[in-house]
Length: 380
Image (cartoon, rainbow, N blue to C red; front, side, top):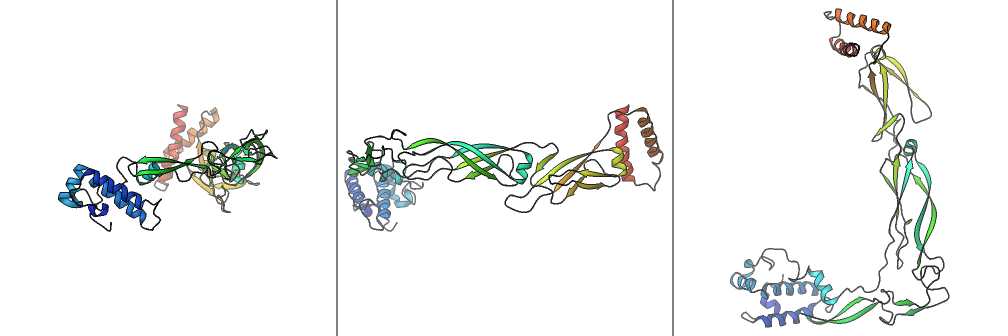
């Protein structure tokens, strides 16, 4: 603040009465109000005037200011709290609205509201993209009157209340004195015109509901719960405002074999204990045209993971793809015939007899014993 003395800001001497402070404030506020004073520093001076009045009109704050200066009331005249306009109002902007009204007056262009649609995709469609034709009902400008609201061939009348301005002015008294408040005309809702002969199709509303079919391209790689935005495909706006948007929400169905984790496909590969111990070649399905061959080494463990690069899910807006991850699931049989049980018992015995052989791989031995312990538990 350029002038640091509140009395000087209001053009007062110390010891003046409360009525003198109020009159000085009203005079200064009217002089520097930005609606009246177009100088570049008018708004800043108006803030200074409000700050000074906030302190000097309050007996306690004024006494502290007279004794200690600004230090007694905080650096901004409000007992250390940030200045937020004249006391009794919500803020500096509210002062303008309360005493001078909404200066916009005329109706402003408003964008139309958004619409939502839900699309169900097969798992493969979410991976490689799809095209859908949606049928939706939305608000559009009336096809008969082009949104004007009046019957074609008839004219719009100038509003008698606001004389075509879309605004009405009324005098209002306040602590500042008498001001003119500008508000939207309620007779024409700010348009400045009234409809003499309403359109028979839309009954003067200027809008009608129409059903449209819209083609939507779903990009490759979308996930369940994502949304696709179609700009300008929502409801029509008012007063020349644009259309809203259409948001298409994606539901993806589950796949028979695959799960998804980010950009990777997850495939659960079940094998038996013999295949896990001896190794095996497996044919792995993919979402492409051809299957993939996968060789599992001897001693493959339950929970092992193998990857086939580039056979996963396309990254959105990219040519790159994730991987196909194969998760090994070693399944222990729940029941065995007599011969199978005899063979496995012999195998288990052979592991036990070779337990002391130092040439064996102790790690694999313990793992293999774990599998057959599970078998024993199931068969016991």
